[in-house]
Amino acid sequence: MKCISTRGEAPSVDLAEALQAGLAPDGGLYVPETLPPIDPAGLDRTARLPATAEAVLAPFFAGGPLGAELSAVCRASLDLPLPVVALHEAGQSDRAADGNPDSAAEAWILELFHGPTAAFKDFAARFLAECMGRLAEREADDAGARTILVATSGDTGAAVAAAFHGRPRFRVRILYPEGRVSPLQAHQLGAFGGNVTAYRVAGSFDDCQRMVKAALNDQDLRTRARVSTANSICIGRLLPQVAYYAQAALQLTGSGRDELQVVVPTGNLGNALACVLARELGFPIGDIWLATNANRTLPDYFASGDYVGRDGLATLANAMDVGDPSNFERLAWLYRDRDLRDARIHAVSVPDEAIRDRIRREHASRGLVICPHTACAMEVLAQRRRSGDRRAFLVAATAHPAKFAEVVEPLIGRAVEPPPALADLLSRPSRAEPLEPDPDALRRELLADASTE
Image (tube, rainbow, N blue to C red; front, side, top):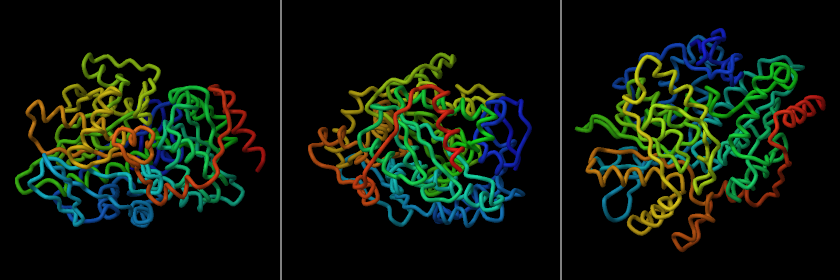
């Protein structure tokens, strides 16, 4: 399948080329030229995620250099635990181990945090790394290493680092806002070593994102340092996320339930856009609720119709501290011929105090321990219930609460044990290099990297 730029001033390219480039030459984001017809009714509702992903993504990869390898890519990257937890109005939650959650439940949590870095971004980062690794094997031996450049508000950097760590022909450079990620996240980012370097930027996530975009728009730098990205502006990060929403919708509908309403915690809008794409492809998803923190860019847009990007505010849900979400450009492109505010997409801002209260309430009432980002989504669900909305809802749980122990533990009154993979990273030494929020400073670092080859 061919991909085109959201800005319409760059030539169309194959999907494989788009995922390697990251950003289009005109500064736009790559999108599929068309959305392929998919018949969800013909898919296996009981399949594991790799098989579902292969079925959903096959039309996008057809005819390209990765088409014949898609099945192997999905098996190698997406075979991660994906529990669905049924929520009841009272009592404990039940884990649906067989993929067929209790049909009487009104809401479910989709646990997306069982990968190696305990965040939903593991799925897409591993998929992208597998694709790019297979493409790199076809290059000439003297092609040089490719630089994977990432701006992170907390979770993306670690997921990308884990996915590319130790892979030949790749170096990973991570930019994060110093003092604006959790201590555990900061330790994760600097704990990989080897071909991964973390930079602590004296600024905000939006500063980091601007620096990455400037590098990607610098053609000389892109050529000399072979710069690409694994941020959600890369279409290779976006597409695999469609698969887990498609799978959840297939599993949880039918038997009298025609569609599923979904609440997605969101910052840069990539994960939420994947849910929107799943619905556009025909999967039984109804209203989509974007749960933001105190950064109100999206709620204000849906209230007024005016999109105003701004600097991100620091909040408890720091991985969503984004004031100018890049993927809004893709969302606006997708609805370019329709009114986006009539698209059954809603956005709700959840302030820090409501996040704290929701973490306390879920632990007290259900025994659930949730991260601040998932708390934003659970608060939106609670608001829907208070308004009388009794439809079936799915809540995306995006990170393990242990990653935010300094927020969660005082609220629930007990320790939260990290999963084994996370504990292993925490046991390693960690180092991050200082960097000014200046595109020229980043340019110098990347050129220095390239000159050492």
